Amino acid sequence: KALEENGIGRPSTYAPIITTIIDRGYVEREQKKLKPTLLGRAVDGLMLEQFPHIVDVDFSAEMEKNLDKVESGKTDWHKTVDDFYKGFAASLEQAEKTWKARRSRCRTSLPARSATSAAVPMVIKVGK
Image (cartoon, rainbow, N blue to C red; front, side):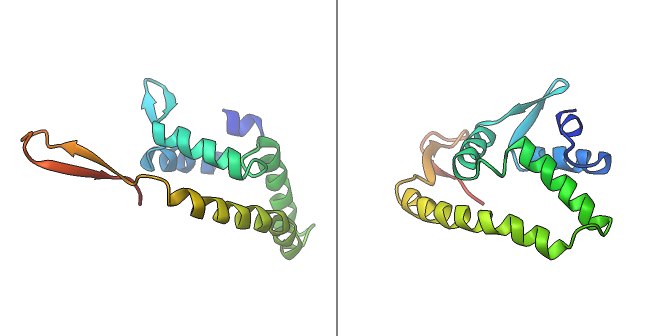
């Protein structure tokens, strides 16, 4: 409902969006609602920190309008992409610098015990 109310996406894209965020582990279904997972909260927080303008509802709605203008031939797609990328490139460059520094300080694995045998150590890896 929120996507539709804010002019984001199309009815044909709503179901694939929901499927994608569930499949990637960002949310899980709880009764008839979607509940963010720890991974989803972490990704959301990082996106808000590094790309606040991109995850903004108003930005997404405005981009939808711009893409509609491209589709109808009222605006050149090169201009639309260039206008977007000018601001995005600077944010992306800064995020890459920030991530490089952070990654060296982050743990990517956690020690764990096997459910079948407490004597067998395991490692839980986080990442793609």
